[in-house]
Length: 445
Ligand code: ADP
Ligand code: MG
Image (cartoon, rainbow, N blue to C red; front, side, top):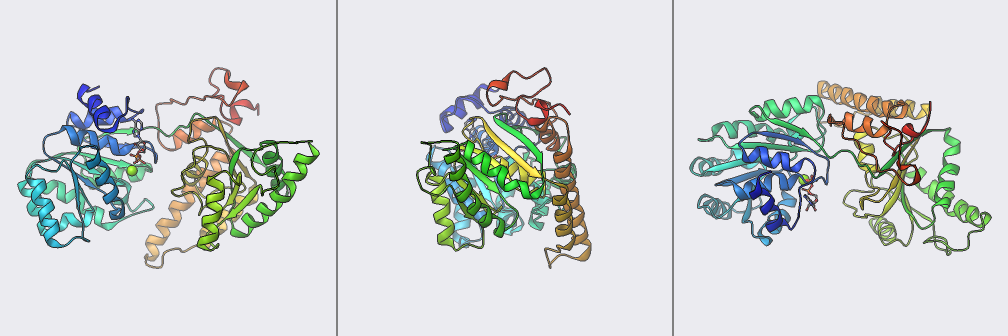
């Protein structure tokens, strides 16, 4: 590893070591190789371009779709002594010109822009007269129509890079990229023989379980599970708003009964008369949603029963289990939701309850759903085709008999096979080739 990169990591960010995947990306960029890095949300993609930006001579341009986040990112960098700035369409032309002049004069190391800026004359002039060392493209999947978040403005990035008098090194970063999206990123951004790395998808402290069961048995199974884990925080995901409310009611009735029957006298939150579970969905008033979220995050209520509206931006590290009452629409969605368990690194459980009729329901929803009226019929057909393939991946996960960690990391294209189960307790020492952290490796089929 580049000694200077390690020093910068400590000096600016206060971290002692790189996470898996980060050092390879930093190293490649510093050596002048283009990079495509696929790493999950929270894995630490920002450092992968911020550290090269700090070390390379000249300006680094960071292209990011979210203008709303630029201010925070720029403030955080300036706070640690890395001069950073942004230009966007919300600023007056004078403000933009002033920032660009500062960047040209070498007073800015990282310049954040949305892709729309690249096409403006002002920005082109700036780029023609300024030494640009690095272009980092965040959320690079936005360039592909095969992804979920296609943005036509991303298509301008490739031309912009080609227009520069001296070609900078280019890094593309994303959390989700199927084979097709990856090919688009490389082709449309014009990456030059990029090093492709896919890392950080395995979550060894999560124990994965897939359980086929009849629909009518699910609520009782979940009530048993919650009753057996008093004081533990958990999230139960349901497919519909109505289900979240019905299941929260069931848990509030059934869990205390079960605990009483088991002779429990003490326990964590929820056992001393307070509710065990609270519902959360997009149909609730903002106040009710805020209250439910607060009660859960502060451990006043141990279980939240939610639709997929719950989770974005919720920071709770000690979630001990995530149970899915229905099969999600994709592995991507499942990984996001289940991944909210065990952020603190402690052993946690992710159980997916499903049955064959879930598949029928999902397929029907998918075929009846023409979600975006602004898409042409052809685009709609592509989108439907994509969603069918995503669903097939999810169905495969439910049916597979192989290691669930392995299935997941292979799905995301992490080929190094570095699946390492930490186990969830006594069963840690699995047999050779067994991960010790999924039900498939413990079961015999
Ligand atoms: P991503 O963009 O991949 O979703 P971020 O770049 O926002 O992730 O990083 C997520 C969090 O991880 C941040 O709080 C960041 O400070 C932290 N982080 C990144 N790299 C490291 C590291 N090497 N050691 C410790 N924490 C890190
Ligand atoms: Mg990010």
